[in-house]
Length: 588
Image: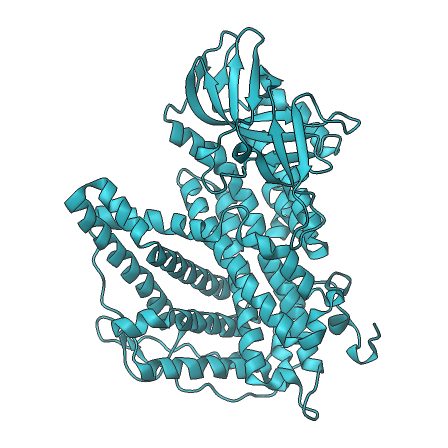
């Protein structure tokens, strides 16, 4: 397939010409070259997975760990989540918050002698982890912590692995030492013995039937005077000595808590990457089938613009988030004093954006496959069910978008940011440079407007009034989170396309432009209401996006198919008969 060539395709429609502030015209970046040569799929696969190449060369544990768990999501999402709970959430928390005394537990987890779970979420506390109600009180007489579930709302809820298999759990509880509450801390609590019997004071139950993800045994935990030894406290950032003296290098309770939950970033990244990988599967199945399925004569359904608009925008979005995730992994690898804050913001935006996009992309793929998309054997429907929860766990998406927006607003209030004028739009020429500027302007405009409202409220009524203004504008806060995510992913796409091998750049540039244009379309209300773009400009933008879809669909979608092949998904993992077999011979 890598050697096949596309015929010369139709030229782009005219685009928007955008002027810089000094009046000079921004450079037009044509994408029609993408239509002349297919990107070699093996080379595209190498480009998309070059982080894995680095791990093989350097045996870098973080990337190795990420790659291993990502691979499982191509096989079965329940298996991936079950493994993630055990190794990432439970094992990762013990590794990051524990010390050498806890390494025996980690070794037993590695051999699956001790299946693990992660006991943070409670029936009454999901996003508000600081408000959990499970208690842990230190008893100096026995040098033990006594854990209790004071009421049913404090029961640990939706805990993966608890219903049937977990023997231990990393339990978050409010620690009290000498009558003083020290905030949430984490304890290793044994739930079952080697024979599967509950430990004294422990009660667990299955959460019951779910929409999907049936391979994960989610459950509920109640603790009644459960005693654990002093060493059960994960004590990297807080210790209690034999006399019952509490010590921590981080004096502030909230800062200490923030440090303790910092390890959740790895899980959030895995959920985001899992969403991207599901989109790869869905797009590949749907595009392959659409290229081979005629309707109303011999015309393949992929040739219809309504199909292209759904599937090719989904393909471009999938590439955008994959490349943005690749950049984020490199930030984690590099580290540095400011990396933690950056990783939190970026992982929050990418997790929310990737999973929300996954919902739409898989639904579009399902519909574009018609009834075949509804058959479980073709994978898309079951993935929709199994993965629907990814918009909630590892951080509710709306809450994560607020976490993206909050530091932007805090910095803007402090700096007294004011709105900048939009880029000047003249006649037709939409290039990647101008799309990037329009996306950046939307983020800046929303930031400045919200910051001004918060600052004005604080000036009248103090800091609490400023926070009240934040709460009163949470819909705009979510829009700002989206604006940041759109701008960030497009910038990442641009940078990665520029660094790609020359044979891949035309196709990547085409996809990047399509992604950027459709993200402007998604925020069209902002551009029209502020006068940043006229109605005619929006029409031209829409026509440009359609033209790019036509390029991807030319020759019965040979370029789009090559880009799907660039994901490198083996047929035995795609599994869907409509993608890897002959749908004409299908029998139920």
